[in-house]
Amino acid sequence: EVQLVESGGGLVQPGGSLRLSCAASGFTFSNYGMNWVRQAPGKGLEWVSHISGSGSPIFYADSVKGRFTISRDNAKNSLYLQMNSLRDEDTALYYCARGTIDYWGPGTLVTVSS
Amino acid sequence: QAGLTQPPSVSKGLRQTATLTCTGNNNNVGNQGAVWLQQHQGHPPKLLSYRNNNRPSGISERFSASRSGNTASLTITGLQPEDEADYYCSAWDSNLSAWLFGGGTKLTVL
Image (tube, rainbow over all chains, first blue to last red; front, side, top):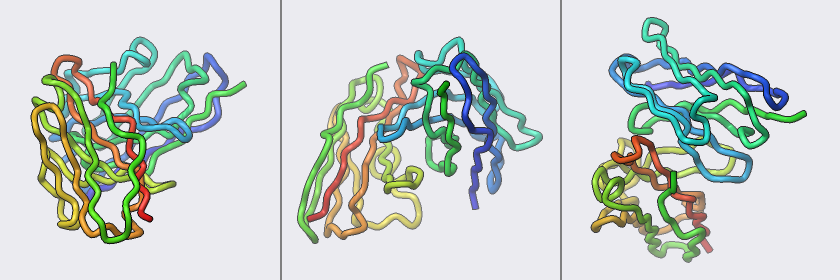
């Protein structure tokens, strides 16, 4: 059974940093690209970033380019999102989603507030 | 990165048929096809259909997807109370190298 579990969310001040993790199981992790998708409270889904199974290529949404960094460790079946220079508008539930967004984790909440 | 276009809301009666639409362009829906997701309040999205009309195992045959040009559609037959949810379409944009999402359609079953 495919499982994705995010962690690392929390409350952070504007300008601060946070690192999210996603633990994957139930499939051959290195064979799949992975994505981060976020959802602000009461709003729709917004794609954040994609990383291929090998780690390259990597793509970012314009809204996070230069501030967020996606990475993965295939030996640990884990996906990461390093978020720097956080803004109020980054407040959202952050989901990791497999490849063609066929499986999603339950999400981890990031709140940016002073 | 502009998104895909979905109507904000659709309302239909119990046991009726609802058709939700999603419009993109030649670089996304018209090229790669659309993915359809269902999201109930407080839950993560769930895949209903990929590449236009392929249903994952466990998804009811009442859900069917199609595409005509740059517009994808999701048809839900025999509406049930549990179908009341938000529905999102998504497609990979080959020009932007990005996943695009529609704004979501809130389906109300009367």
